[in-house]
Length: 331
Image (tube, rainbow, N blue to C red; front, top):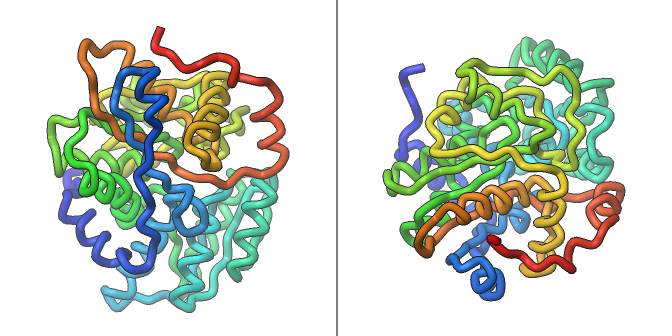
């Protein structure tokens, strides 16, 4: 793959979607900064349209198609959650009928939300079956498939998260983002390195769903054989994409996060930032903690909080045990 995306692609996406998506805030916690000894900024994409960064990629892809006189008659997508909502929302905004293929184990609240945006939702027995059905539907004339991450315009849209944040807060020492299929992380890499080549870009995924880490280690895309057992439903993809893998290989570091550490930070970030925090978002905070422990001087970092859509069963598991009695520390 020779034609890698450039900062200009992220800027073009920003121009397409700037008036269509939310300008999400940068927030912080002086208490957390004091405890950890570093300057930490959070980009709150849970306050984005549909409650997640995915709105950016879906919106940019459809706007790009229309810009190039390729407006489809029908859009299809496959997703276990936030991408499903994003495509349904964006397609409705542009007046295009949509069908979304979702695994039956998807969050009920995300299934309901996708349907409420006007999409036809087809539940499949597994993610593999959903992937097969969407590929079959995409062959129909006038139908366009927007995949959840393995698409250059999806990646460009997701890259506007880091782009917007860095435009607001200036240069940082490192940017952290979670990894499912790698779209957000790939876009973050392109945007960040385009603005500041010396800034590190660092990824994180659940140890229980570590296909990306295994792929980076072996330099070959590795696919999980079964649906991973993790609360991070935004990182339950079975493998990264051919396109996203090219960027993931270039990351400065990549961390595999234990479930208990992810839940710990889900609780603490919810408490400190007063926001709903998806467990997937908390992956980046634990990666940042591990990275900060290795630093010999105070650093300025950006952590992308990817979403805020949590159903009740997941919420009960998050708060099953109390982690708030253990104050955050780098010790």
